[in-house]
Length: 413
Image 1 (cartoon, rainbow, N blue to C red):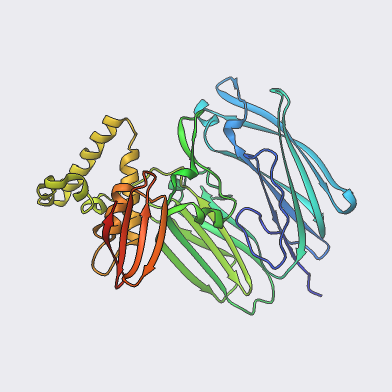
Image 2: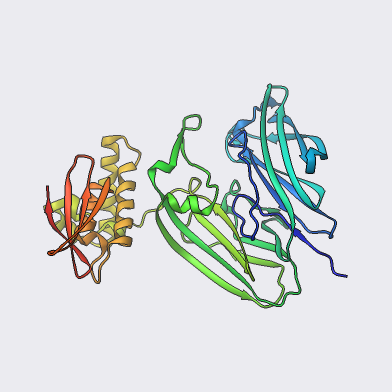
């Protein structure tokens, strides 16, 4: 008799089965708790509790030639009728050689427990008794019966060992990621394995300044929908799709040399779609393709542009670097104006390109580059045609008329 198997959906990025999984908000927002179920038998299953939080939240003390911290973790899992299914407590010790290492990256701990089939609630407390600090998190989850893909894990190789990968380890040090999964089905259908490297730019309202570290960070995404909502620009740098007809339990993803700051991995099997995403947006320095700005510099240089246009490719790049470097020093903005102009250029080229004209050459592209995103956009229809009106905070208005799909600026006031 074949074993039945069970799966729990990882609440951060994994989806999607027919029944929803309840997920309650963490008490401590920075304390992340992922729950991954492995598959053992039809009666019970091993569950990995993956606990993750920024290492800077710990308090280290100097010990000899290193820095050390100790804390305990208490886990209480209740089943039906609040019956205690598991109560466990253990100690952790973290040692870092350099002080700087105590402020960068994340702590990721994995605790494996055995649970029967059912509905569960989990409460967890991280205690630093020495410094009188404690954080808590809670979650509600289910162990459900379903056949198909399960136990998806991403690894990287360190020497000869495969280690579970997370974004705290620099992707620049990885040449290949390995994807492992289990299949608990008769395997009578193919698996679609797809991954894509993305270059993503977020709206400015989705970044925040961490005063303690004096750097810019990105707010964590709860799901892909919230990511898409706050994206200003997305480019697929590289995508690959593979159809698997044989049960290959380990797949590899070679890390590309081109710049990217987001990796999306997807596995499809029958009606299952399981997604794992890695966000490097706040961990990789932004790389500029200055050739994209060759044309839009016309709006900044005016009559000087014709001299710029006669330059060689390399001289144009150097001119742009020096031009924006001067602006950055003058305004003490750490390159913010360059990045904003670059983001606008990417946006207009992606959204307003028409036939042989690039987005920056169109009327909409020009107004967007100079003024930025309008506060409000209105549409009007009359006997004379279709119009789109851009309204800015100063109540300045630009009126575009749709002429066979091309929007031409016909008025501004």
